[in-house]
Image (cartoon, rainbow, N blue to C red; front, side, top):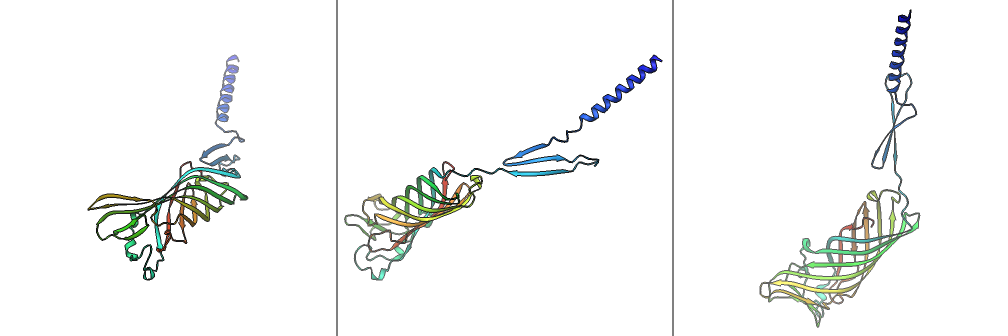
Length: 282
């Protein structure tokens, strides 16, 4: 009798242990496995029930970013692009003064080397309407380089430009540097998205002051040369400006409806290129 009782007790204990092991393999019905990939959170829930196979539901929740501040400040952005000009000069009527005796072919550029580099020291964006419509403004330096494919020569005292028939120019560049203040209306179509996925456009006007101009050249006869000072350029310039923001970078462009020269020649400069923010917030 004692042997039978002991055997039944051992058998019962074994059944209890087996059932306990089976129950511990089940996940609690209230528990949920989660996985996060970047800004996406995936929730995996077992439906339970008598089904031999669990059915799963996936819930995706994207992180919503906070609105930017009402006044957002960005430090340092660099533009890399190309510049050129629209030549509106009537050379037939240009018989005296600055540019007399020149023609359109004399001012042909080496387009691949006519480089525009701008350095924007600071940019600010002021919220106007729900962070979608903003006022954008700043200050920076515009560095324009016009590489000529001819023997055009610029002089000072008095300012003059002409075809230099006495030299053969291997390199020939006019540089014009400005302090520029842009004022634009900005439309930020993704105010609550990751800045790396943002999209927006800006358009407006910019005023510039010419603080430096120089003509640099290399000739076979004399080697390197440079002429600095008043070369006949306008001291003040205004231009239409715009940009399209695509995530961390922007495409920019500008066009001036006035000539870059103060007299005679009617060359209206423009530039296009890529804007690269250094602090990642422009």
